[in-house]
Length: 131
Length: 73
Image 1 (cartoon, one colour):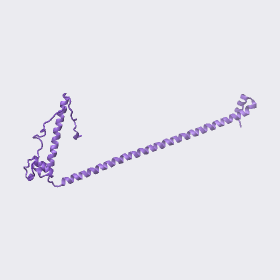
Image 2: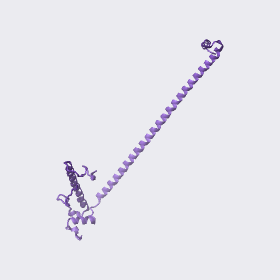
Image 3: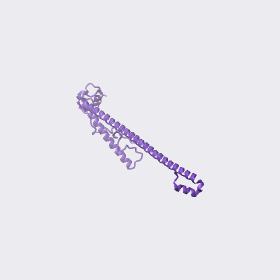
Image 4: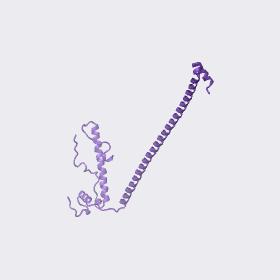
């Protein structure tokens, strides 16, 4: 079970009496080292995978957040545009309605101001008291 | 510096005059008033420009409005 070269190496190192235990110990140490390295490699791979997965998740969440924010901005802009368009339509409606109104007589205040400037000479000023 | 202007500064021949039609038509009255507004703003613009000119040639202590009056901003 123990490789021959290992046994001969152990014999050369510690003599025939302790060669076998040393070779067993060397074998065991080698097996343990191989196991340790294997476990470390597996753990490192697992850590790398976990980190990559976490980074991908963070990137996904950030992308989703950006998408939500962009949608909110777009919705807000659309809402404002719609609101502005509604307001303009209302103003245009009022302007149109005003333009269609028949020419009204000036209000009393406007009439008095106009008559005052015209020294109450026009016929429409008859009856108004000059200031 | 205090600069005084005569009280009749705005009583000028080119000021849009009130019309007889304005006593019977609100639209005509509004037209006259709007024309006077435009005329008054034009006079003010020229006064502001004169003020800035005097300030530029070295008269100290003058406070003038900017190129764009507050009602035009």
